[in-house]
Image 1 (tube, one colour):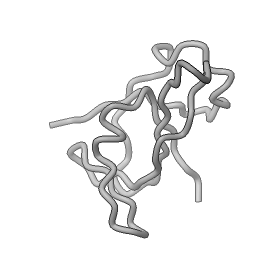
Image 2 (cartoon, one colour; image 1 turned 135 degrees about the vertical axis):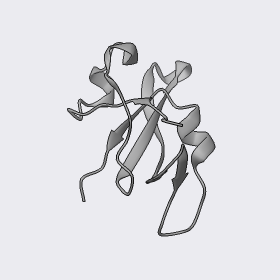
Image 3 (cartoon, helix red, strand yellow; image 1 turned 120 degrees about the vertical axis):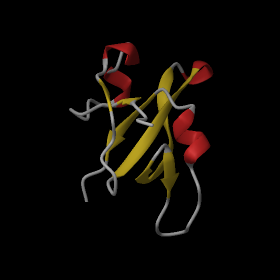
Image 4 (cartoon, one colour; image 1 turned 90 degrees about the horizontal axis):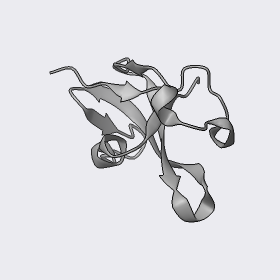
Length: 84
């Protein structure tokens, strides 16, 4: 099953994104690090929720700690790649 996410491929700063629905819907690259963002109404801004490696099939894990962030990525508003 292919999992798709809204991906900020241009790394536009979070405070400059007016509508995440304008971001492209893509399948993340397996083995690449991403960070997830979610909208916080009381801050009127997107904030970073988590960062992890995409393992495929909708599974997200921080390889440094072994923490499973699948739920954080499942419910986030958009993600963006981390270039390391």
